[in-house]
Length: 263
Image (cartoon, rainbow, N blue to C red; front, side, top):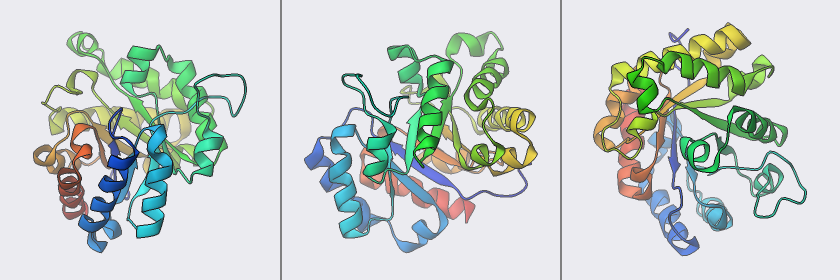
């Protein structure tokens, strides 16, 4: 299933960092740093806060920055009396291409359960964008040997009865909760084992072609030093980068490392 290399994706999740002016500068710097070799070999997306999306879109389009625009979250409904929410319809109008759903911080801090994540994922698809669905185990689940069970349950709940074609073009990010912000990522062996579990579960639920086409990212304390080893394992197709994506230099180094490894 993992014998055919899928086109790699490196996504930068900026979380709640950078105002719109900082975003303009960061996008311009990425445009200067990312070359044709990298953009030819790797898909790249950046995911600024909602308030920065229009600024990022303007710079990306005006300066030809070789990245796709992404969002960090969306509402499950397309419109309605949901004060403070941002719908997938609104994101699509800004030419957002990727939307993160089910990030561990959304699950833990904002109470998003598997049902909510599945609804948001479908809203992303309904509006013509690609979801990056996050799954992962926490430290207690890992210590109890429940990693595979947790990943299988999250994957099954997320993709449910989605058509195989939709599943094949979406992205799943494995983010071990115990590694996020810890400064120490999972080992390549751990990442491969988790990714293989995810791909096997996708094959069980949506079929082998969907599993073969699906891209799986690793996310959790990714930096320039760990990017290449993690991206080199067979079932990992790229990276979801947190803190290191805030620095255009470090993020570019990560993208170049993945491009060299998977070219």
